[in-house]
Length: 259
Image 1 (cartoon, rainbow, N blue to C red):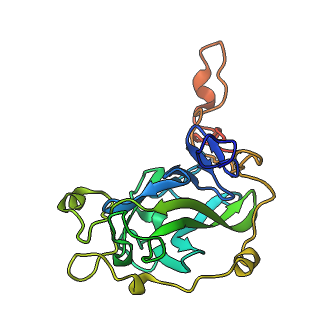
Image 2: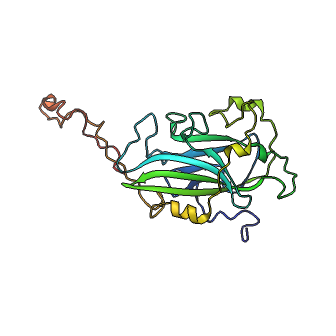
Image 3: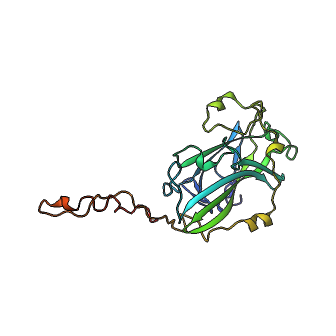
């Protein structure tokens, strides 16, 4: 925090107008780095369309050049040796369901992760006596960029230090997508139920296949040309014979995309 007037140093992040660019195609909108978190659940927002450049379900996402295959998320702490699942495509229920299939038609996907029971606290605990503290939202992206397949991991630091009550508030029942996971009684999940082995930095580095630069910012994103839309029929003439060519091209003259 030196030289930042006591504020966290975010120089390691590429942040433009609040958008956090990652090594993958996802752009993080919330939360911001180093935000103290608490409340009933953790809210994450990710633009999976590259500001509208890429289609999202129910539109067909298949593209030989650029597309998102899947995004999974974990809550990890190297200091506390914790690794909790946020979303890993193991069920059809949010937040564990495939993020790309949630909120059909929306370019921004919202993930609402119910804090597990070991993160409950009022912010007055002694450091080291609970699982509360410094964490990363670890965002794993499997994607294709300009014809090459990649796998990236991006860690967004947060602090789990604000108050988290033992029993989630009833108002969250109105939240969409619904926060989760919950236990059988509708309360907070046991941390052991969503806990994974914490992978060391060597394992993580060996698992990634990052692109040679940052998509959108350093690498222009290319998509395959589409052959729908545009003018129906060929050029007309000035002697009222414009209908002669009508329908020759069947409406397939417009190239949309191309990156």
